[in-house]
Length: 411
Image (cartoon, rainbow, N blue to C red):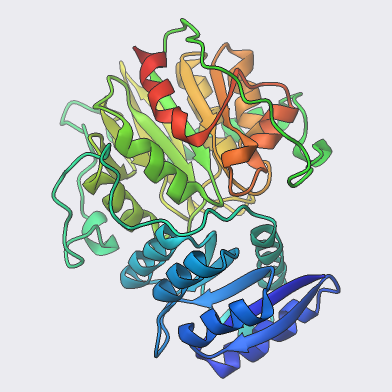
């Protein structure tokens, strides 16, 4: 039985959340707290398996509570956050303090007991309860991180500002992107994924901690690479903050597909950009991929790519309802295969589920190099385990070595 502690200042939200959790026979609510201070105390007293935590609360906020819990009694924590720029910023601070994952706090879904929202919530709580907890992480940046000037909260990539940005690399001589070409390309990619004879996700077996991945020693492949592609989900934001800031200004572009709500990716891109040598942006429809720039797929969309002469253009498509994840690693990786063939260095980091398995299978058949994060350093060993089980990985690496290995592989 999974023991759940609910920490939220809203009595309504606590009541509804208790009802949802206890609708699953494998979980029980062992306690409720109305603020962060009480949450810290109940964690010590009740020793829950997982905690759901609000961000904004009186007495002690969620960020401070997470930090205290990670110092005293490290426990997997799922954050609930408002869909605002400020909420996104606070959520990333909570993740940096040690929280495992987050979900948008949608009172409407909870109030109306929407079935899909309830299923997603239960699945997320279970996944977080099985995750690895790293304990307290000091907020001070690593000495290996670059030193750009960190923008103030008033200037950090708010969606309204990001929406007006001109596409990177676009010129008057570059044909304008059209909705028709993006739709046609997206349909082709979905057909490619459907026809892929690789291991279907439904056939993969997951062991949640009982299986140990075989971590491998780095050996340069000797293959040429025109782009680096990274897919991640639960635990991904912190993993990416370990990798991207350690990279120098690369001579190829980097694309990232991180499962994340629409209102969070611009803030995440700005936070990474402030501490990285690479220029990190939330991808915009029409961006021309440039070396030394890292493009993060916008939440709630699909990111695909098309050739424009000798250049490659990013296309951002709204949620079509055809895929489970928006953005989807499989979709973006399959799209890259059509442009770059085997000249892709692709890797799958920590995350729940199997997104990325089909995309990596397609890339591998074309000669691409595929890496997976090892189980021991994953928060949730789902997505990397899928590609390991499918037999398409060239290397299985610990998180702390991935940035250095990227530099060596491209060098």
